[in-house]
Image 1 (cartoon, rainbow, N blue to C red):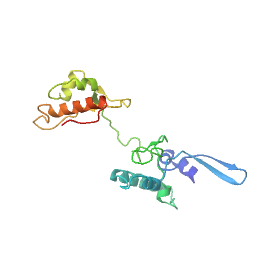
Image 2 (tube, one colour):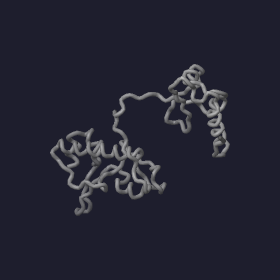
Image 3 (cartoon, rainbow, N blue to C red):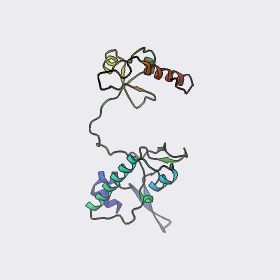
Image 4 (tube, rainbow, N blue to C red):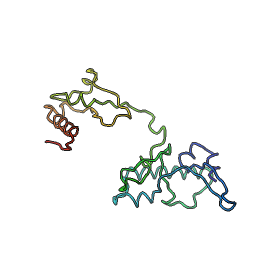
Amino acid sequence: MLRKLQKHDPDLARRHVVRLLDTFVHEESFYCIVMEPLAMSLRNLLQEGSSGGLFMADIRLAAFQLTSCLAFFQSLNMAHGDLKCTNVMLRRSEFSLQPHPRLGDPDEVAARPLWPFEEGHHPQLYPMWVVAMEDLLQMHGVPPSHQELKDAGLLVECTPSFHSVFVSHQWLGKHHPDEKGSQFSVLQKAFENIINGHIEVEL
């Protein structure tokens, strides 16, 4: 059945159905199925996660992908005969596993994000611009606007290799949200404390 699903539409099968890698007979008595590495089931996540359950965004995305999977089955006049949370497995599209931030045991592994949007879901991407920490700490007074930072050559396009970044957001309205730079000064001081090993914010 898995082969039939994969043959009918490989792309949809890759998104919605566990990947069948191989089959073999062990000692002439056991028929073994080799599948892609998976993390944990939806039930495992609920049991081992926090008592608060799942975020609403996770629930919506899980429901969307689950109904998309069932629609794929229906297109072949098929129905899942044992649909339950222990049979809903979590994985990333490239099958790499990472520690899940909402699980108590750091040794547990699950997919992150829980159910990533499929490729092509966001057709248009926009660059994120950041300011180097050393440049940010040298600024004084009112924080400059995005255009001023750009004109001064202080903006750098964010890349996945960055570990800590400060993102400059634009604002709407006639008045500057930090006209005297007092909030910006608090932020700079907080960063300096963190760099010096003191996790504190002075207000």
